[in-house]
Image (cartoon, rainbow, N blue to C red; front, side, top):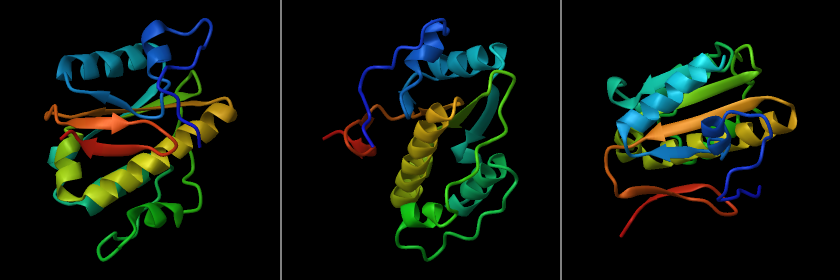
Length: 168
């Protein structure tokens, strides 16, 4: 999959949402993150927000995300050595329920808390959501993925594969 650093051009689309067409969007400022989710709501997007600090384990987060994807329950990730393969075992996750504009936004508040607890699981989830984003765009849907982090050391490296890494 090819991921570009600059947002794709989408004529007639709201400027902020056009900027969010990257597979995963990183926000360090909570105010900007909240503004993006509110703007998406006003434009008819179905918004799914997950506060990563509110979940006790990665299993809880994965179950909540799986429920957003059509109400499936996720099997336990405990003991899984390859979380990305775990997600791929669902086949392709079904798309979430979309809003009036055939669009949805999945937003993770304090994603760095999830990443610190289970880095491989968090990375696997981002990779699968980036793939879902790509296939949805091809099918005429928009799935936007936004993550908020409190620690400025986190960044997204966009290239042939999506990776989240700590700056050195």
